[in-house]
Length: 593
Image 1 (spheres, helix red, strand yellow):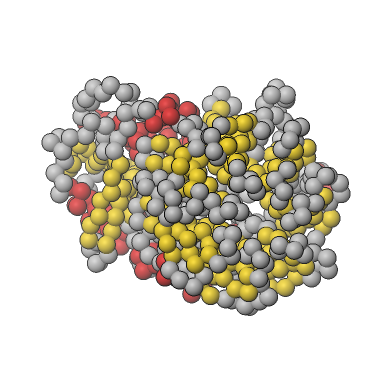
Image 2: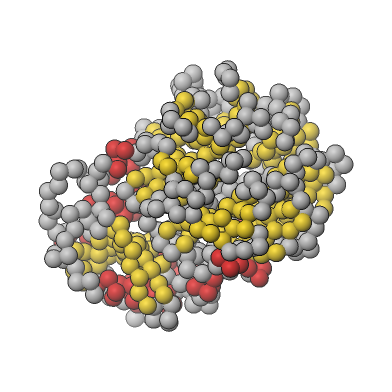
């Protein structure tokens, strides 16, 4: 039941319907609320939270472009724009109208243009009444003024792209059209089910590499075949990116055996010679490789690979010669599940990111030494599907981040030895609310593990009072509860509950031994860890042991079902997106007494 670098997410509606059920049940015995000067957080505040993502530092190091998204409650979507932030002053310039599917901004190598993905045929300013469904295409925006122009017309859209180092062309990945397109148009659209999402409505097709002039024109196909570039499902980590060699002659990419995203493990890193079309494999492995990136001088490639080739182990970063070979595992001593790797300009080190205890950390990892954690204070880099960060040509770092009381904003580090500077304040209204304090709790687990958790306290918390407890169990299990701004936990806390986020075995924040301890122990072990955490929290003396609720999503939902079947301390329980096989087996067990 373990997963590799993946977690299940959910729609806002489903998540907060789940919240409402849990809150309503526990409210049967809710404590009185103390008055506070500032208003407490409410469900409606969710629509006020602004999302900041996809930071990219300009080549001259003077500005950062970000995607800024706001909830459009009436239309059930997020409205996104590109915003340029001046590093020195923090001043902002909106670069685009609201566009659907806006993502992946990338400066041209010279910085004179900006490319991004967006759907065509719609924007909120000019066509709000006539929304048209279309696939994402590449747009190029001149930085000295003018409107963005689409440079691709891929029938099934563009999944990702990368500027050639001379700025004259862009390589992009796009799915092939189905071979039975004519039959599908006649509604003869049956397809053979493969290793895909159970909600799939059509057979997946391979994604391949194309080349298009940045001024627009006819795209040239560079690869073809029944194999595919790596595929990922919606809400999973971004697909392994295309990476140009500095001389513009080669492209590093990840090849998947077939286009079924469920076969994500059947991937290897390969190198395409653009002129000849020749493709060679970087190593001799057959699976689990991905995210290959040329070093700044083109002599090396960094790529992802799980420790010992076992997907239940931590993801680690290997560096090898761009000629060939498996190379060296440079992150093994870090002993963390690394979910981002970006070359630093010197070519002798990498920026890494991942869960680290009860926080998300970033490190500078030298190629031949120990990793050095960057001091971020209370700030956690955003980690929704991977660490959302960028590195400038001068070694500066930009990232989307948050604190326990401030949702995502843009942060900037001039050099790795400096503290992060917050450049935006989109979510100041949320930060000004009367929010609960977030802390951590550590305890000795039942099998000798040193374990940890997050604890969110109600506003106005007093140790002299008794509070009901809600468990908020993370999914994965390769994930972690960290001291981020957590709207779900803050909303529960605003109703007078202490919210407990335990990191049970299988979590990816405490080293490889802890992460893989869930193998062949998918429920009993995590259950013991969670119950030991509850006991440690109860010793603090402020938990009302007669009012304890348990909840979780995905693997957290599975653990919720296991816990209510093995322990009888719960006042309420809500399991979201739980594993149905586990639910059925538990139901049968309970019915049999």
